[in-house]
Amino acid sequence: MELGKRLKEYRNQSGMTQDELAERLYVTRQTISAWENDKSYPDIHSLLMLGDLFHVSLDTLVKGDIEIMKETIDQADIRNFKRDSNIYAILLIACVVLLFPLWKWCGIPGIVIWGLLFAAALFYAVKLEKVKKQHDIHTYKEIVAFTNGEKLDNIEKAREEGKRNYQLIIAVVACAALGFGVAWIAFH
Picture 1 (cartoon, rainbow, N blue to C red):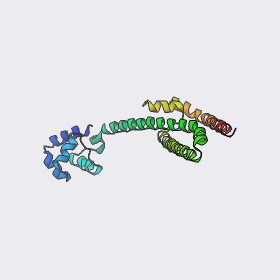
Picture 2 (cartoon, helix red, strand yellow; picture 1 turned 30 degrees about the vertical axis):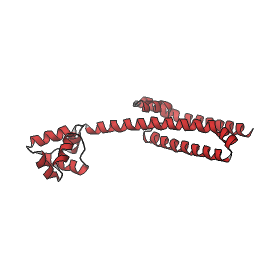
Picture 3 (cartoon, rainbow, N blue to C red; picture 1 turned 30 degrees about the horizontal axis):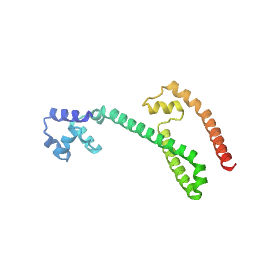
Picture 4 (tube, one colour; picture 1 turned 90 degrees about the horizontal axis):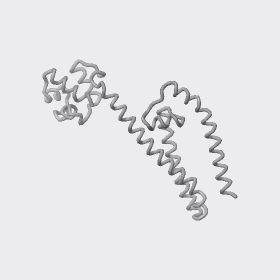
């Protein structure tokens, strides 16, 4: 992070020791040292006090750190999305493949097991939908771009938004056909 370097620079320019700065901010010298060595980050109250003390804006004080934090958060979102997508895919395949065998060979306990698998799949489906809504991704191309850490430009985004209605209709028809197929196999 850049704040540690800036904080040390401002403290040295004003001729203060870490102890003196700590006393003015009502923290320990170890806290100042941790901030300057990027081992911890000051809370908002301390950032405001630092800005006042060094006569700099909050934006100037944390400049650069915000972008680094956003990038770190985005990478964590992508990793979590990929992990949850894999779990969801496995659970969904298990639900489709295991419905008939569990029902046929285990009876009611098998249906309960299948119900638990289905509930877990729904949990991950909802979790993935929240991430998609948060990042405004709907189409396959948008999802692929997100998982690769890329963003679509405005023209590509507009094209993908135009496809969303058609993809929704196709998804509904596909789900209905799948449901009909599973029901046909199960009852015949």
